[in-house]
Amino acid sequence: MPDRHQWGLARIRVLQIEDSQLDAELVLSELDADAIEYDVCLVDEERDYVAALEEFDPHIVLSDLSMPGFSGQRALDLLRERDQDLPFIFVSATLGEEAAIEALRNGATDYILKQNPARLASAVRRALREADAQRARRRAEAELIRAQRFESLAMLAGGLSHDLRNLLQPLLLAGDSLQDYQQDPRLARLGRLVRDCGKRGLDMVQSMLSFARGARRAEQVRVGALLDALALLLQGSVPRAVMLEMHADDTELTFDGNHTELQQCLLNLSLNAIQAMPEGGSLRIETTQAALLETFFANDEEAHAGNYLCLIVSDSGVGMDEAVLQHLFEPFFTTKDTGTGLGLVSCKRIVTAHGGVMRVDSTPGQGTRFHIYIPLLERSAEAFDQEEHFNLQGEAERVLVVAEEAGQLSLLVDTLDSWGYQAHASQSGTAALQWIEAQGVPDLVVMDADMNLFTGVRTLAALIDHGYRRAVLMLARPDAPPDMDELPVMEHLYMVDKPLSTQKLLRTVREALEASAAGQLPEGPL
Figure 1 (tube, rainbow, N blue to C red):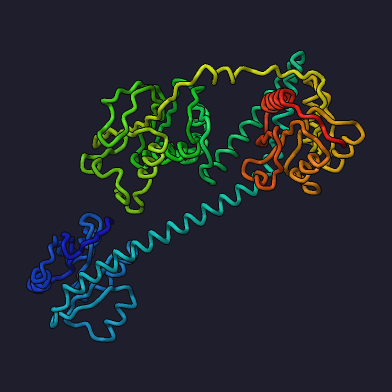
Figure 2: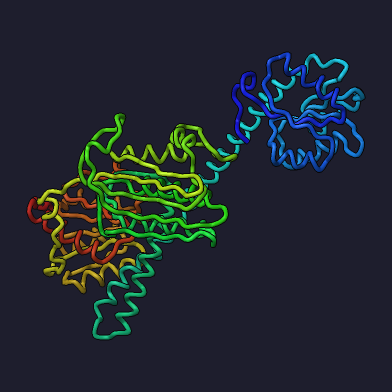
């Protein structure tokens, strides 16, 4: 039911239950005298009353207490079964004080004696205002409960993420390691299976965590990853009667943006599309590229001609008329009984923050198409040069690996060994310092930030105190990174999100070793 904010001025729908035409006119004359504009539906039977509640969709019910074959109390009971807030006022000549009190207890909003109808108009105005306020409170309470549940989900997801990543880390490294045994087809297939399962699990964890926790920073967004994450979130939300299609003209296309916010925007549009197809239909999400001219942009938009990524969400639903389209991006405007009117406002904010624009095409009965245009910035030759692959093979450099978890430690050491590094294992910060005192300074230290007895931050500080000046790779959970204020200042410190693939590990190791060698400082005494 739509909210009414100016009850004294707006036209209201009055459902009147009365078996006397004369009494009905006398009641309505009080509304006329107070300049209340209204449409009225008069009924005196239960069947007509129930039909009017559905079809006439009243803003208020005015009811006599008793009629042949029907009663006001029965009408009140039927109304409260379907709507707790719609005002219901008894207007009766036989309502005594005790009966009036009982009626209020049973859910009536007010009562008026036909012998004294003067306060009917003020009672109607007050009842409508109070009902409006009550609906607003219920919506606010529902939003608060939803927000609290969402926060609880985020906390639960964060708590589980550590254990899930620890489980996925061995799968990723072991899968990559098994790929090296190409001479045994069974081991190679097993490696691909293990690696793919690990990556899929990681994608699911990352998608849910990023959506629950919200956006963090700008990044390079890959179109294929964006659509894959959206597909995961839509699982279970698409009815069988709705056919979902996804297509990208270039899944490897990357652009500057925020993966989480764009994912939220596409999810909002997709769920709106599903709700617009109650009888089923088709939902299509696709991407393409477009060259926009300055003439494409509206007067209130910044005109930047160039290449754009176009994200399209289209449905075959009920569509929207011109009146709805005019107010589509206004805060709190909604066509849904339980909507907040903020979903599309949030989408437009996200697109604008990316320097993009939105367009919508819709026709009643023919569906809706949302177009999101995100600018694609031209990349310099230097940027492409930076993406040239490193030579990942080691040259017998000594790498000290520090991690408490035995499985992780073993896989890291085995991976580095198999790629030509001399990898040495230490299961604590104390053991790492003892190894350096006995064996000398390594070329690189790879350590886990999540250690309990001697944390990664403390281990790093102790290494620096002992004069270590070469590169360090610190593996940390993205949802719980080390406190940057606690990290000691170090020239070649590389923070790497867990879990990591073999390629990511080897690329970062090569980058750290080469950077450290280029600006290497003399070591202090150990």
